[in-house]
Amino acid sequence: RFAAGSLPTGFEGAFGPLLQKNTSLRSLTLDSNSVGDAVVVAIVEAMLLNQGTRLRDLNLNATNIGTRAGDALARLLRSNCSLEALFAHNNPQLGDSAVVACASALQENAETRLRKLVLACNGFGPAAGQALAALLR
Image (cartoon, rainbow, N blue to C red):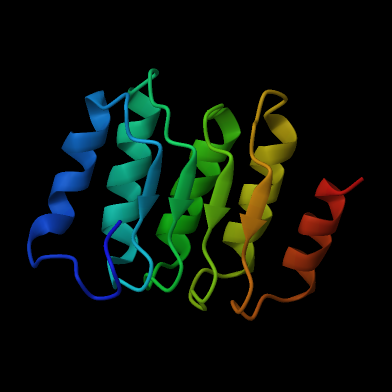
C-alpha cells in the first residue's frame, strides 16, 4: 500500500517487472498517487504474463489514469480470474469508451471472480451507464 502521494519518484517503472513473477501479492493500492496510464499498462501486461498471479484487489482511485489505462484494464478483465475488486474512481479522464470496453470484457469472461467494481466520480455518460447496467442482467 502506498499512501497518497508517497510513491517514490522513479519507482513507477518497477511495478511491471515485480508483478511478472510475483505469486504472493494479494492487494495493490496506489490510491491518490498520480501514476498515470503507463504504470497501469505495465501492471496489466505483467499480470497477463503471470498466470500464477493471485492479486485480488487493485486500487487505482485518483491515479490520473485515462483511456490507455482503461483499455489495458479491459484486456485484463477479459481473461483474468484472480481479481475480485477493482477500484478506479475519481479518474475523470478514463472516459466512456474504457468503461464500455471493461463491461464488455467482463461479459466475455465467464470465469471472472470480480465482485466489486467502483467507478464513481468519473463523469461518465449514457453509453457507460448502459454498458454497466447490462452487467446486472
